[in-house]
Length: 419
Ligand SMILES: [Zn+2]
Image (cartoon, rainbow, N blue to C red; front, side, top):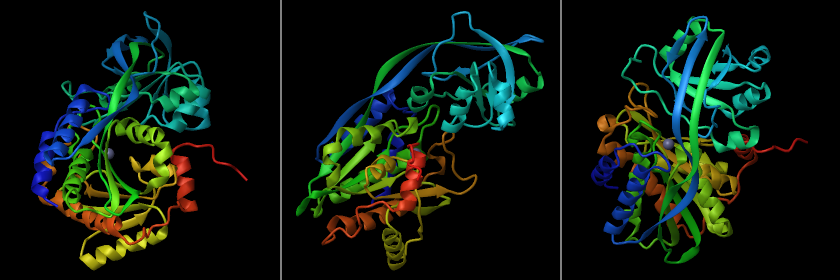
């Protein structure tokens, strides 16, 4: 594994590249060109994503004292009437039954990220709109940006649209302190169908072509983040693995998928699995890399597969002298749609220690990344992949253990059968 090559490719990817944007397309083309420079072919597989153009968004307190706050609008959360929508305000501080009783017909401010459970409860409580906030109370200043949020299709398809706004923590505190009775929210947007893409390259097996190992890493970022730690790092590690295996004649077929729109809800890997449903039974393993390159941190392997794989990777680390913390669990990344299709997965990552890495914000930049850290993780993945690619027979059972299946279903919000 050549950490220097990985590092220089990572520098080229150091720009905001949200799923479905033209910057994401530019990043896809950088990956495509890199594959070509290895004198191989890659293709781009596109898929549809929902997008929106926000035309206008406002939050105003109208009584007792009028005041406006800077906000962003949740894309794909619908449009209010042109003049906006007036409603009483409620600070929904916790997901207690009492909170939802009080929330009916109000615009509510909630803590933390919007998630499936909270959204379901807000929909049932018939709120008129919701507001989330993020940022640091000490660091927020007039110049700092307000995060951009999206209402995921999974939520509004199931529970209907609720108008969503997002604001800074500092302003949220000010809003609650002012104890407003009534607010007016305005959100006008055009919702359109956009396009995102996966980049796919393959090395055909020299002996067992019908057994495929897929390597996945997402190359998109969240808004305002240059996404080198999450997950340009995994993308360039994948590229170095591709370079390594491209002239090694591995026994099995190796397929590299750089996934788009992961940050928007694993859209790229979901699209890949849906599109290739007929060929999934050939895939024997998914090796996913998500976050890496951080100088201060540790390497981990999250095994979303049979316990024997956990032991295997742990033994391998001990045998080869790798510092690697291995566990069996699910991992919120592009492996999940594969796991859901019954394909065992292993996730490699280098987690930054507290304060030594930034994720999902404007500080995720090259400053805390090194070529040797990329190389450290890359070497672990390479050693493991080499063994899997060339094993006489595939040693990992193609099944997902029960304890993991439950977690996967919960994570992907399936209706778990009760018996
Ligand atoms: Zn990620």
